[in-house]
Image (cartoon, rainbow, N blue to C red; front, side):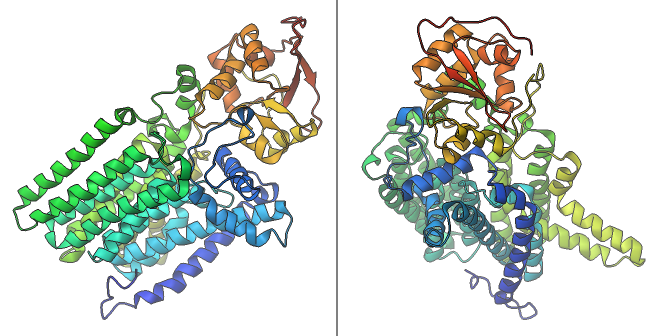
Length: 604
C-alpha cells in the first residue's frame, strides 16, 4: 500500500520507513514482554475474555466443530456464544506450530504473547503508512513513537490479550489508510474486505464501518472522481461479508440474530451496495443532487433493517433479563459511557484523541491540494470514533489509533518551536513538555494509576474474608474433584480454562437464563437461592471475596445469600470445604431434602 503516495524529491523514499517500523516494534515488544513477564509466566489473563478465547481455541483444536463456537463446559453443555472463529485462526496457527515441540502450557504462553505483538506490529505499520499518506515521513516516524505510548492501544495488544479488540483496531486503520490513498477500485475493494472482516469478527465494529463508508460516500459527493473507490468498497463489503458469513457460520448461517452478522444485516449491506452504486450514477449532477442520492441510499438501508429485523434496532442487549441487565450489564465497564468509568481510565482513553482531533484539524486547515482532502477524510472518521468512545468505552482504542497522524503532526509542530529555543536547559524542558503534551493519556495513567477497564464501585462494607486476587487463588480449585461449580460470572472463564471443572455462566449476553441463575443464586434470599443453586446441578458453590462482582452482589442485596455468607452466617445445606493455599471460599452443596435451610450464625 506504500506506493499510493510518491515521496517528494526532498523526502526519503517510503520504503525507508520499514526499518524504522520494525525497529520501533522490536523495542516496544521487548519492553512489553519485560513489563508483563510476571503475567506471562503465571498466565495471568488481562481479561476473562482472554481465558475464554484460549479455551475456545483449544476446544477447536481438540475436535470441536469450526462452526460450533458454543461453550460445552458451561450450563450443562448448552451455552451459546456469538464469537467468530476468524480471531481463533492466528492463535491456532501458532499453537499448531508450537505443540509438537513444547508442552501445551508453554505453547499457550508463547502463542498468547506472539499473536498480540504481531497485532501491534500491524497497527504500527498502518499508523506509519497512514501518517505518511496524509503528511510526510518525518511525522510518520513520530506516529511510531506515539503508538506504544497510548495505554488503550497497548492494553488491547499487550502479551496475553488475545481477544478480538486488537484486530478490530487494525482493520479500521487498514480501511482508513486505503480511503486516504488513491481512489481506485482496487483500494476500494480492499477497504471493503477489511470492513467485512471487521464486522464479521464482531458486530460492535459496525458503527465504525458505517462511519468509514459514509465518509467515503461524502468524499465521492465532493469529488465524483472517487466513484470507482466507493463502488468497489460497497460491493466488496457486501460480497465479502456474505462469503465470510457462510464460511464461519455454516449450518447456522440463517439464524435470525442481532448481535452478529445475520441475513438481516446482510440484506442491509446488499441494499447499501446497490443504493451507493446507483447514487454514483449522478456524478455529473450538482453537489446537492449527489448528496440527495446518498440520503436516499441511506434511507433505503434503514428501511430494510426496519422491515426485516425491527428488533435489531433496539440493540443486542434490549432483551436481557431485567436482573441481568441491572446487576451485570450495567457494571460491564467496556460497554459503558465515559462518565461511568474510573476517572483515570477515562482520561487515558480520551486524552490522546483530543490531541489528535486538534492536530488533525490544524493540519487540515493549513494543508492545500490533495492533502487537504486526505486530512478532511481522516478528521471526519476520527471525530466520529472519538464521539463514539464517549458513549462506549471499548471503542476508545480505535479512536486512539486514528488520532496518531494528528498527534504526530501536533508533536512535530511543538518540537519545531522548541528547536528555536536558545538555552539548552530550557530547550530540553520544552522538548519534554511537548512529548508529555502529545501523550496526555500516558500522563493520566501515571497520575491516576488507574486499572484499565475498571469502574469505581462504592462498597457498603468490606469483606470479612481475605481477598481473592491472584490467579493461584482460582486455580487452586483444581484440588477439588472434577465437578460443576456454581461460581461468580467473572471468574468462571478462568475456572473452565485452567481447571478440569465445569461451571454455569460467564459474562456472555446470549445466555440470559444462565446469567440470571448465577446472579439470583448470590443475591436472592438463602431459601430462594438454594432452589436455584440445586437446580443448576452444581456440586460446589464458590465465591471470591474482595472481587468487584462480589461487592456488587453484597451491596445490591444486603439480605442475599452472599451478603449473609460474607457476614459470617452459615447454612446447613452448604458444607464448607477447605482450599489450601487459596482465598477462594468453597462449600459442598447438600441437596438432600432433609437438610435444614439454615444453621446458627457463626461469628467471623
